[in-house]
Image 1 (cartoon, rainbow, N blue to C red):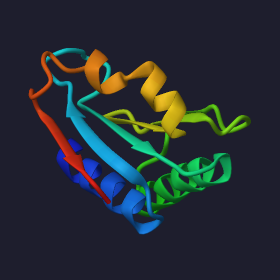
Image 2 (image 1 turned 60 degrees about the vertical axis):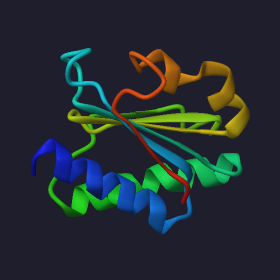
Image 3 (image 1 turned 135 degrees about the vertical axis):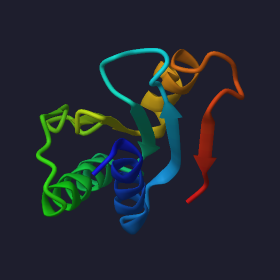
Image 4 (image 1 turned 45 degrees about the vertical axis):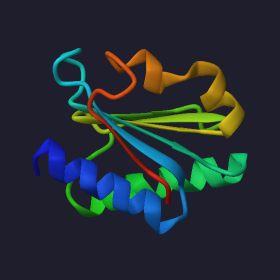
Length: 117
């Protein structure tokens, strides 16, 4: 599975459990750590954790083993590392504070694909 297919799998898995404001960032030209970062919001700590759990389960079913999951205890910001795709799921207030979309964009319109799901 290539990184674009993995990205699609992650976005679809997030959509399945009603993630909010899913954003896909293509960071291949900015870092060698990963190809894509996907950022999404959950409505509560429990929702944030369930979003990440659903993505991890779908990835495993597709033969992709997550490298790691960080932040599950608090559930305000959970990071799922799938090597070619890094998933950040956050509560809206945390997401607004850290503003990863701006941090990882060269400008406000570069390679930013947002979906209101």
